[in-house]
Length: 173
Ligand code: SIN
Ligand code: FE2
Image (cartoon, helix red, strand yellow):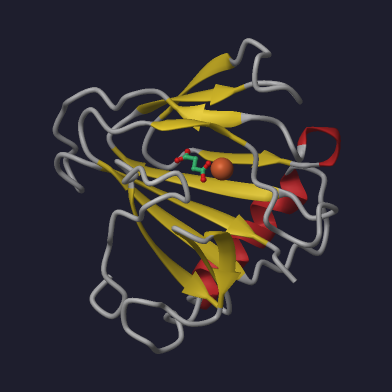
């Protein structure tokens, strides 16, 4: 966070996201007026994203394995910061080249309602409460499921204060 600070990115449609983002790993997910992509360089700093800490990589690999996906080797970790009222609308994670690899999500701080839908945006999503320390793995037939986060309820977390941090691990290349 010190090296590649959180920033609220602007989508191709011209909207500023309410979620603030940064990345670590060999690739980082970004959006701007030209589209969505993974980039080895942080456009804000002009230098590569910070390395993915080995402890993060190991956690993601072990979680994927427990979810039935062996050999998960993430090369990107998107770090999302939600403040009260912040939401993430339904979307698919589809900018990766390799859909055989799952997505691994780690939740920290304030609890959130995770929305997990189907293959169409219009499919009614199931709602899951995610609390500090929860890990979600999705892949296989669910790899391209629509998902999002409901507006974050206000609160105070003992370790992280008035925010939720989510890490999502992806295999991009
Ligand atoms: C994401 O879909 O990239 C993040 C999901 C979450 O914050 O739980
Ligand atoms: Fe996502």
